[in-house]
Length: 343
Image 1 (cartoon, rainbow, N blue to C red):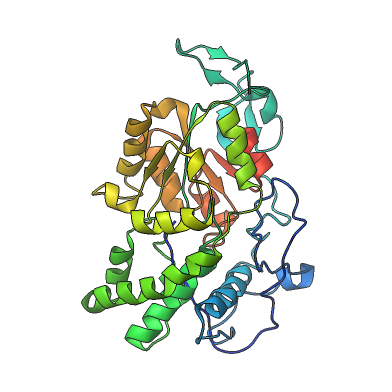
Image 2 (cartoon, rainbow, N blue to C red; image 1 turned 90 degrees about the vertical axis):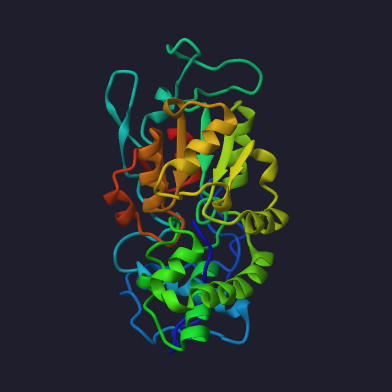
């Protein structure tokens, strides 16, 4: 997904800064300033305009306020998107060895196989292989999938539109194209005449926030496991290469990836399949033996258009699990463990 961020107007109880040092291994919970609402808070309706106080003087405060907004936006519509109480969803495009459809986290370990070079099913054996694998190549989105940047994205969008346009735009409208269009295209959708100024103001606010960027808890372990099994890993992101480098300077994930395709590497962008196909080309990999893991509808559509398996994750905090399910991904997962199960 692509980066953005900033908060609302009136006050709600401060739910912003509580570290979660003992997050369950494999559960992609944000490791920084992650609010952990109780059941009563989770049942609250989405915030109305003016219900969230932000700290306009400091991007960090903006991000904290936006994180609270993201937690509230879907509080009344189902489980939250950081893995707390999220139930496994149906895997629609994957079958077990007997042709039966599987559910994420239910029986998929027995069916984790990949096609060998002759196209038959086989179990990968040898050093580093202690489980069967379905996909030899796994591509990942970056924002909202590997790194917890949803609040940054929202805060910077809010800051840019308030600063340049001096008006409030509903969060849902600001986030409509996150993960698909490039930032400049998103800003043209908001105000074509002032798009350049919006982009510049957004980046001035957003780039310093990368100093606080964190990987979702458990995702480094997921990448290490996949690497140890001999998978080829890549990133396909709507970020520009420069901001990818900013992220990698703070979150040490670059070592796991053999290919990184950023927004400036292709003319067309998600949901067009070109960025995913470019990553496959760089990896000399086949779409039929590859999966794309992402947190937005655009990720799912791009994977399908490229002929790859589409794996949607629910912890990105921009799109709800229900919205992702509408796109009918091959799997919809709520934890790192479930993600490994379907890969």
